[in-house]
Length: 552
Image (cartoon, rainbow, N blue to C red; front, side, top):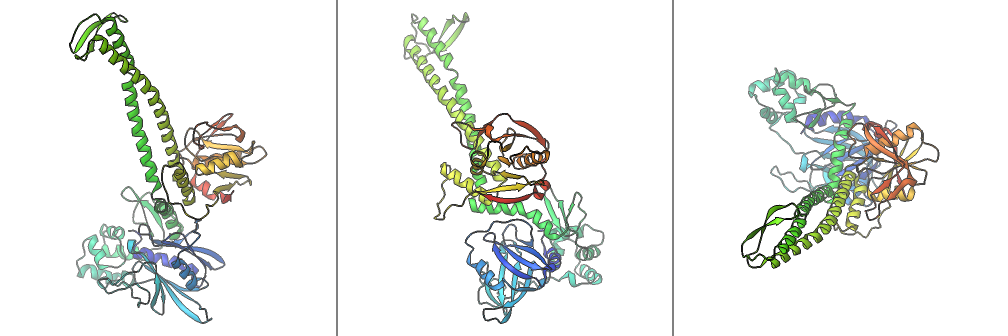
């Protein structure tokens, strides 16, 4: 992983900006993610600590997170031991993926005491350990005796996970690094990793592909921090400095890079965990109904043969005088004046065979109306779940929990009801540069609320044309300015499946021209008197807009 020991060491240097700062607040984002609110140098910082098995990391964040109403006991312990404490030092242990926060504060008796927070970024073994007087007070994950006799349990003596077989290259001179390469005859990327601490495959491959291994390692270790994101084997990767990758994006700091790289990934992972991967369920529903539609089309094609059955019945009656017990009969089709061969059941006479064909005709005639009804219902289901899929892609956890409740109420899924009183919908609200308020619905519940309850007749309503998307409402009595129209259209295009496209058509009209479609779910509406604007969605534009949660 690119977040190796060297990367974390460079990050710790950046984080020294809040050394001697005060920890004002500890908040829980999820079961594995926490935010420490820190005041330092007359500024407020939010330090995100994630111990997720997939996206473990530490960095400053400027993002807005939602916090659970009832934090768990470990969060309460962190608050007890660290809120109000001063951060006296920030460093990494050797060149391992271990970040240490040394703090100092007063206990319940008013006596000064030092406490240490050790953050181990090690994939699914990531952990956060509270230490006092070198004794473990508590940890996020309890670990029994390992092969190296290291125990992470309350009351145990704290020991770092040591690796004596590797050396810390950050403490070595260029000559010392050269001597190690020569004495151990290091020739492969794996051998570099096995001999030096904190080196990831990304860095070791860069070194082994250079002309001088030792010089390349020394220069990379001591290069200035210049964080970049780049394409590596058809996927995005990152590092604290450029390793000769093209098409790279440079960031102002490591924290900004990590905040950008991991935010959506981690958000989607939290949503999957909280909603039992609702997105996967929705995709399965779309696939199920699309397959059903194919079968219905086949049934409709088969049922359309009913007219042929009626013709066979008529022709057999017209030739009922023929006595035959054969498997087929050839008669003249008086509609076309051509001969036609009709299959027969040799057990029955001509009249009885005609009755069989008329029964098939009546059955197919009844089936067609049923199939057409089923087909229309199936198309509605596909449209609905495609709408839900688009909403999930642009929603936060609360929005998706509301979608989950909607699917539960419609009996698509079954979830365990909690005794907690359901919270009111939080509707995203933006303020334009001219001070105009714009409401954004990110699921059907919010769209219903915005369009049919919060809107006034002359408020302007926006929606991406001919596609699922958010209902966007501009709350303004006066005529909209060009800035209002373009901003609302930008928001509507961004919260749609076309947020990464260009020249997206967006319809807009007054709210009084929005009508529900009878017989359809409340998310579908018709519009009239609309105009259309084409807009290029911009993530930066949306990010720069002032937003807040408007609660009905």
